[in-house]
View: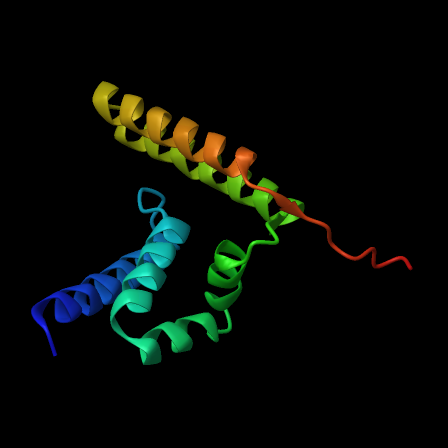
Length: 127
């Protein structure tokens, strides 16, 4: 096993664990860390990458991201709402100018990226 592969596996696990912690702490973004873990695993371990893709909770996030079909509009809108709610809560709790500025810039960049992503048509459940 090469040093690069070991480093990517370690970074993947650290990212995934930090992302899981981010579910409970508003300052840590879960989705980008899970996606970073998926990228690290895709470059270093087929077994860990397959496990992550088939995971009950994290698999759909990675599959939507890696597909060329886009993401569901409902998922995109939820991501934007929860991201901004978490960031606003963090801004109020931390209440530091540079932290607030940093969170705003990150939020704007992620929002632009999410809004530019192609949307996948979801089947209508009423039919």
